[in-house]
Image (cartoon, rainbow, N blue to C red; front, top):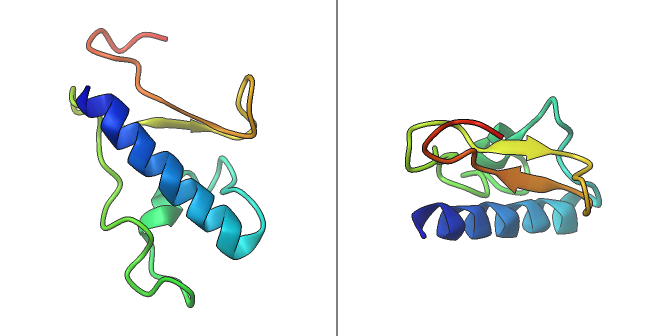
Length: 80
């Protein structure tokens, strides 16, 4: 449940980024860009990029398999 809530927060931040910049973050920028200071978001959109409940980074893919992007946690076993 924690991972689902964090993913929802990350997705909301990505949508805020899209609204501000008319694009989604690139795979190279990743989720880290959401926590960086910019002209429009001096404290970043997120305070920090969270790790999943198992201590691993969330995976960001643009484009996603069925959407413009996807945010994924591989869960406790760390596998896709």
